[in-house]
Amino acid sequence: MKTSMHAGVAKNMDALDGGASTIIHTHNVHRYSARWLQALQDDRFLVIAQSLLGPDIVLHHTKLFQKPPSSGAPFPVHQDWSYFPTKYDTMIAATVFLSDADEAAGGIRVYPGSHKLGRLENSSGMQPSEALRPYPLAQATPINAQRGDVLFFSYFTLHGSLPNRSKNPRKTVLVQMHSGSDYLLDNSESAHVNEQLVLAGWNHHMSRARAEG
Image (cartoon, rainbow, N blue to C red):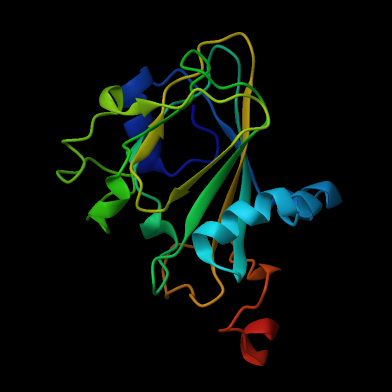
């Protein structure tokens, strides 16, 4: 069972693990906890984000992922861009590791340099894709992270993760954010709330109508 997952993604997960695993996720943890909002505004976090995006940073959303021990679900190789495309493609992810995440715990795997591929068709992981065929999960580079590490990457970066076969839960919080000079394009995907929360500098595309929307 894949908790609260799109049917297409769940089907692709089942192809990796036989359909026996689970994953739990919760949107916008900064709405539940003041400490998470403070963490997003911590100088140690923002100085790296600003080195990638410039002085103006807008939060799109956060999401907690938990892979339960011994049965945490994998995720197929994919790009993030089609879920929340922006005009100038500045959207990046920052994965905050709340627990150690090695291969056994279902750690993230990436294809370094794949952000240079730009937008690939059908790259969301929701369905089989010819564009993703040359990039199997097994050949991606594993990221062995420790609790407290943060992994930053473009929303074009090809990435995925293996099942959690360890005895401990694997927990991460995903932070999606973009430059304040960029903005979200119209998109039919409604699974992600667009927070439009300014973490640093200015949101140069904010208006009264958007603020009240």
